[in-house]
Length: 70
Image 1 (cartoon, rainbow, N blue to C red):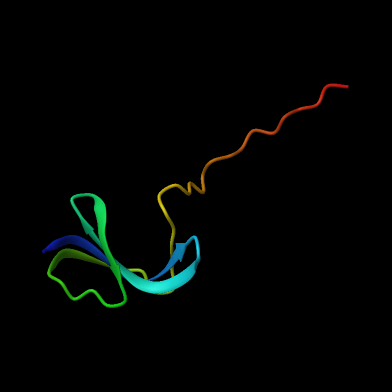
Image 2 (image 1 turned 180 degrees about the horizontal axis):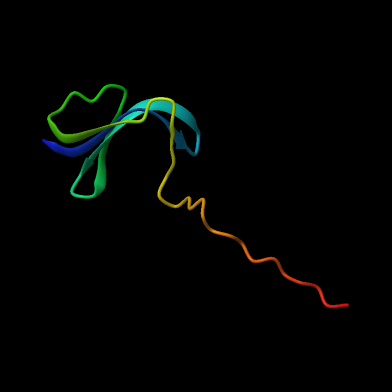
């Protein structure tokens, strides 16, 4: 299976810990997570010394603060 993108050497944050692994993406979805992906790919992203977070985390979202009326 040829992958579209491989994200290499990232610190992947999962619910049970942080792992230094590669992520293979095919057709816009994660196809494989493994320690060393060597499959053919169109693009390689080097994520060394970076954190890779799940798509549900949006660091630009500001939570509204409720104002209390006295």
